[in-house]
Image (tube, rainbow, N blue to C red; front, side, top):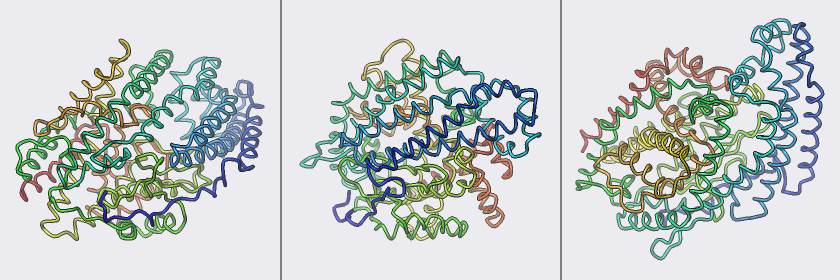
Length: 596
């Protein structure tokens, strides 16, 4: 981090809108109310079968049951959000870890009692459900949620097995918790400094090559020391997933994620193929040009995100970043800026880096009857400004679809990244429009690198996961074996102009998505290229675009990704759609080449 940049005045959130503290009496009261709502739902057990012949009664039963299910979900998700949000800022505090783990277990035990509900819904025929919706009109509002529930219908197990998986879920989740706590406690010895994971990763963008090299070496050593633990976590969770996938008869390791995302496997395959074909004209070519611009033939891996200018990079104060984000959002539509403003006005953002706070960034939607919270580690760099825009894009999206209620607002990952990446794009356009010719080259480099990191790297991560999970079926993989797969996929994506130095084989270990959300990563590439298509539509007709875009966000999870993009004339199941997005990134490389 730039020594001149001060983090003292950065905001920290106040979670008091949820609960005041770990021993807040409201926590026990909400657990009790969640159980009461759930018990009322459990009282309906067995009635669906009895009502199959009466469409009106079945419709009323569905409507009432889903409302009870949502009420219990709101309480339990709110409790889980509080525990997760608070713990993410205190990973060095065992008391918060215990609180989060215990609350997860208790919530799981309550939720497990309503397992029958989705199983009984899925025992009904499609014609019976549609008849119920027609006979009792209020029940029809739940059609999108019921559709999503029924996607998993072919992969359901017996009620006893489903209950067993729920009951053991908190214990399995402790492997993810162990991984998170290990990374949160990680420190890297870098010269005379001791850096956290976030600080070490940030140092890899330092203008001083010696400092970058030092940070890369320190991080590699710190990760190497922890790879036995982190590899055990990854291997164990992959094996757990294998067992469940085998029982559920999923065709491959990514199938459950595709269902959760409501995305077709052929769309993901088309996305992957289009990105891999563009490795050479985008990623490989860009790094050759960057090496040339830096007077080198080959760049070391720690130079990959280095600024072109060796001067200390410009930093952005919090108020400056806030202004850029709000102005950019207002250019799209005032409603977007007004919604984002509420997160600055209220203590709903935690941006201050500090010991014990985990790395990364997110916007947590909590539930539809609460506002979201934004989490990040702001260090004043251009990427941090874009991260702020990214997470506030999520927060605006989550706020706009909240009136639908928690179940209908819940958005698949493939569409959930839309507003966040769009927000980044708006802020970048503002940065570029105000840049000098020399600054423009640096901004273009940064934008291309962001695109490579979001699209090319994430597809490389997806291919790494695919190979890892395939190999795990033959037995546990050592850290060295995992590292070899990592190096092969990274090398293929980055190309010969990037030298993957000794120590880089351990860098897989800090990608937490591999542990807590297998096959999550392709959603970033999916979202980025999807947004490139949307931004082209905006350029064609900005005035007509804004209401269509607001409608897309406000629809939450009520539409599939194909339905959501249809008003814009876009078809994401075709490879040409994804290839067009990669062509946009390639054009940025063309522009950069002209400047170099």
